[in-house]
Image (cartoon, rainbow, N blue to C red; front, side, top):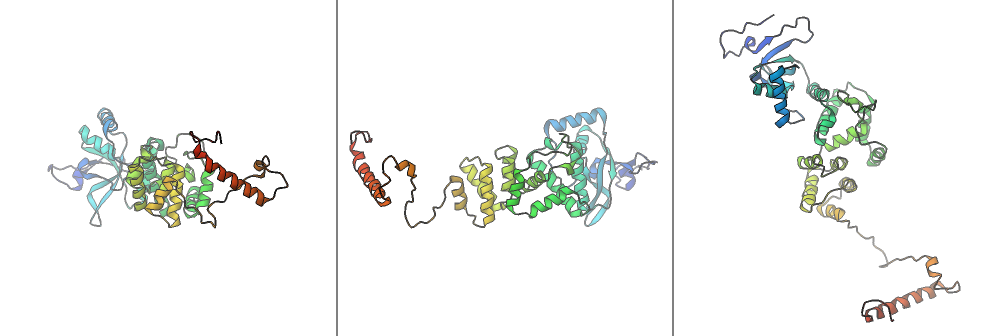
Length: 348
């Protein structure tokens, strides 16, 4: 099967947009669509390839052509699906590299009648099929996993243990979460224990996914610090519980004072935020280790172990007599310590 491309080179009708490869026996018909009519999906969780990675892809396409079909859906314009333009769900890097390599038409599979959740699942599934999660930065992993989790949860079609576990975590009190974190490895693992997690997003440890969901809530400046390992990623997960305003205040403090935030501090900040007593002063006090002293009826309350006093007192002396002797001894000490030239008691 073939389409008549017509004689008008500027024509944008259906025939000029598609060139079928005629896979008549295929379930998914593949069309060749002009690069001008292919547009990047607006809600991609990862940035575009740049630098050497893009250059390598251009070189590969120049040498071998496009070896994998793009997945697209009709572009929606003013609430209606376009008959001419398409949104790339998988293959935006191939399109960019193909334009640089001089290609005009790319092989595409068109998906129709997709919900936004369907689209997000396709986008994240293809990312995990093509790359190891560990090839991504911390913030990129967080974006992919959070996007995929939300799409799967919203669909309501999956009942696997991972979704149930994360739902419980999102609804659990902090104590339950902290207890579970202490029992869980922070590494992403598959059920088989293999390092190869490509295409197996639902074999991820539930606590790890939960942490990444929280990490995805960080403001961009904090995400950048996590990616640069200036903040431990697990600490970043705790900071994800803070509001954007609180995160901005923390960022200002740690950058102005050149503080490297610890996991313990991040956890304390999370608790401070959840207590409803957050303020810049309270945050600063936490970083500087200042604690309010509890009010007491006396200025000092010191306990001395009896064993320490046995060398000075007999069993016959009363508690009041011992206390009087200690006070007199201290009075003598402070009255005479400054008389020694070197500040010691020598010669007193």
